[in-house]
Image (cartoon, rainbow, N blue to C red):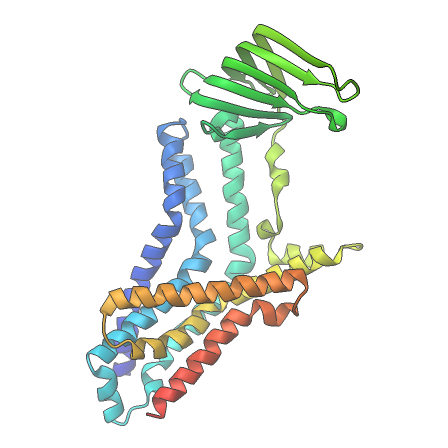
Length: 361
């Protein structure tokens, strides 16, 4: 067991390093957004920290397989470079003896990722969105970015600049949607000041113009200038919660959705593909380790640099096969199970072929 323990210990170091690095890369974009919430938008630091903690489980299904592949390439690449693999084979010890602890670890982690991907990740994603919605409800302009459109009820709001401290907008464009598919009212203003109560959102626009087009009379365009124009919109608690999609649903909820009568075939394929995808990604650490071990033994030089390069190349090929398979499954061009599992199956097949080729040398 000394040899197995040595290999396992050597594997854990790049594994933890990989999880940390890949998690940091994937969370980097959110870090900037969360820092902006605290520094520029007055959000509670405690609330933002809670959001950050909740966000972590949503990226672990991606970072863990990446880290397992990196660890396999780095560990066995270093062992091959230091002639440890050669020494093991010269001593009559099978390569399987130094590989089975890593494969077993990948099996255990993959088994744990199955319920994690089925239930924990979608619940974390929903909870993250709920927390952000809660902050947005406390300040409707929390999501407003300069030079980007923002939606609240029937308003589509655009501001060139935003001063949240004074609750003031500059160079404002507002589209107010009308019922019955009629063209939206267009409102332009030099500045605007907003107020928010528990029941409503009020926007006072200053020095602007109002335009309305009536399709019944194409030659007529209503045009009016104003010094002050006020808009009041009633707010409903939880108004943004209706934007859930199947990625927010647990596997049990997906299965229940498949039982709904009258479900169209396209939606059914998408739901079934999503269910299979969660299991395929859960078993990705095992598939990538099976491929990574023989590739690592082939890459005898380069250390972590070569390991990172090979990791990027293999991950690109893996996720390309995964996306293509998922696309084929959702469009009904191929059966769902083999299409979604294509990436994992290719990794396992090529990994076993490379491993057998090394054993025959």
